[in-house]
Image (cartoon, rainbow, N blue to C red; front, side):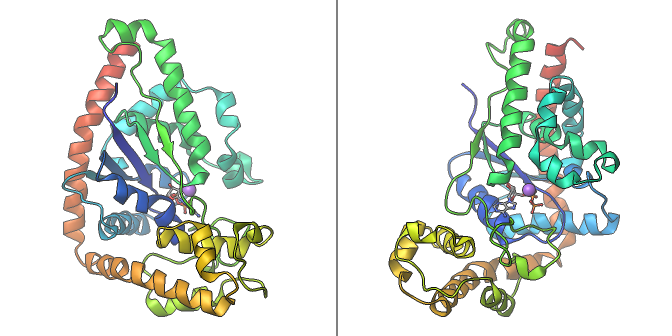
Length: 340
Ligand code: ADP
Ligand code: NA
């Protein structure tokens, strides 16, 4: 039996948006009541694509501020940035030698991110999923809350754990770790907003990298900006249906209803019970009120924390030293198991 431990992370790249919030951060907050949680700012992942050094530094602090503003308690749990714990990179090397090339070749996110210029992307972008596996396994985490887009990477992390446990079974037993050294981490992907879509195109996911700022709600958008973006969000001319089946073929509406449901902690069916037959101006006005009520306090706290750089840095330094203590113990055991 493994100790129940949650690990997850967010990249310090660009603005945090409603997709990151509903798909990941809301769950991070909820899990604090039942699990030991480790929340990482995955800055090593960020440099798999080019970053401006000054902006990267600012983004690391901004994601940290978003974690704290959303309600993560860095004193009871651990908040840190990946680059400060060398064991992530060290374990990645060992797991690189466990993972199979064919497994990585199947990763769809790499194919999307590399696009047509496959010969000219970093080796790091290709190896991103193994680094993610090392992040999780460095803490022998049992549960990983993420959005739908990370499901395949989590399956890879499970495959790597399983192969390590099998390849080194005898040595794992000899070193007193029983039948398995790494737990197979369970993905926690559930609820109505596991994949929040762009407000401009219901078939694309809401993303930091979308060039249109109107495609996403940022966590620190003010009330007027939220209202404007929701008013401009793409919809169709029909009123809202009263049942889920009526969402079929209406991806933009489905997305807005999912957002409403996630923020109001109800199901899409319940949202449609309330708004079935209503027109979009009524529904959008209610959605704006709901989003503003939820996000305004977070945005205000993020802006306050943006003036507290040394406080943020001290949170990360403290979190990194606590994370390092756990990861170092894991890596030491892994080295013994491997034969170093
Ligand atoms: P992005 O994909 O915007 O670059 P990250 O890769 O840092 O963001 O993802 C951070 C977390 O947010 C991950 O758990 C990811 O699954 C989740 N996430 C990102 N975009 C969305 C989205 N549109 N809907 C739901 N969850 C999302
Ligand atoms: Na992502």
